[in-house]
Length: 238
Image: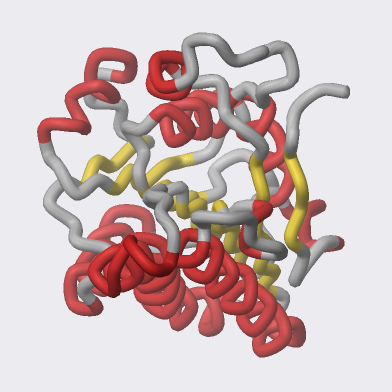
């Protein structure tokens, strides 16, 4: 079953974050129905302020994306509400740096849990209903260091590299089921947090969350199936 643009059901993880909110705004404008997922129920209040209790938006708080059962619960609730999940946009992730000799294995484990394990468990949860429907779109947020690490990025780069490899495998396994899987490699995203952390940085080349959201809007559309297994740079205007 191929869905036409309007009415497509998209699950967005990290929906109340800076990028997540931009994705939600774009997909609402495109006429999609949304399942907005957050670890913190309080974070979802940011969405309520903009969208109230719209019937085409389900808000799921208290979802632990590192936990298989929690991810299955989120998908089951989405299926109960809308009958299907056509697309997944996973914006959840974390960032830390430090030299290998000092950062410690705890940072390695933490970043793999936050970046790679979350991507794996939520992908596994949505894939079964997508396979049964014969249609799906999956988009993860990776990072350029996942292709080549710089100093102090070992754990971060390795965890994002795992997201890229996961995406490639999902794409290869599901091509004949009309399920695409891609990941985006953003440059520095223009957020209040990044501006505060880098007050002297030149921000003209930073990528806007809304621009990434536009790219995601294409990738989750029926036309976006022409691209699969890709790691797509989104590094800002040049």
